[in-house]
Length: 239
Figure 1 (tube, rainbow, N blue to C red):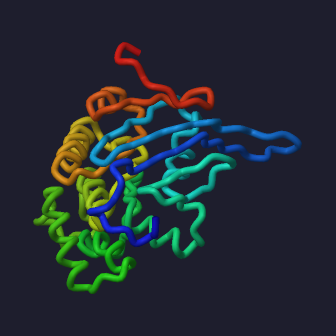
Figure 2 (tube, rainbow, N blue to C red; figure 1 turned 45 degrees about the vertical axis):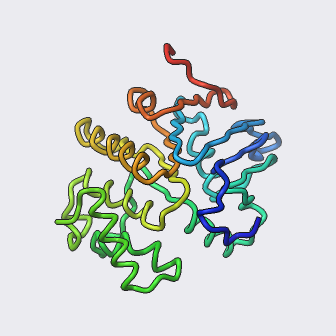
């Protein structure tokens, strides 16, 4: 499969991990974060990953996003093993097919909400005019049309996270990876972001992989997997 495959001929399976292991050298020994993990995520599916602090959830998300390489095993995003691409090609692929949302929004403080959301489009080679059109449309989707010209410091925590979500979605990715997207928000604001994720998934057919400590949110989103003792397993409803 080539790297410019169009959305119309994308495979249904957006993520496919096979026997993924991540280890680090630690002094004379080796620290294994997780081993032989397999995971499949289909288009339009939401998968929540839970587990104790230090279990490796963020490490796994970084592997799925091509920000780190597995020690062994394979990870395919839309049929492409990103780790077989050079650094520049991998960055282009990530910008086209993946979106990222973190606990802390990582918005650029000197730019407006509109300009922050435009960034992935501009980096992807779109004209400023088209980038602006897409950014305004996506900010409207997340309920922020009145706040286009506001900088992050002029927005509430929930609004900043909505801008971050709009930025993750503006290039119409196949999958959005979220690391504790409501972890830095109060309960009411976190609930609104949770409902926004559900709404955008249903409207746009985008897959979401959400790392969260919030079990109520995890169970309501869809399939729940627990990363524990280096293994990824289905979280049973009564657990």
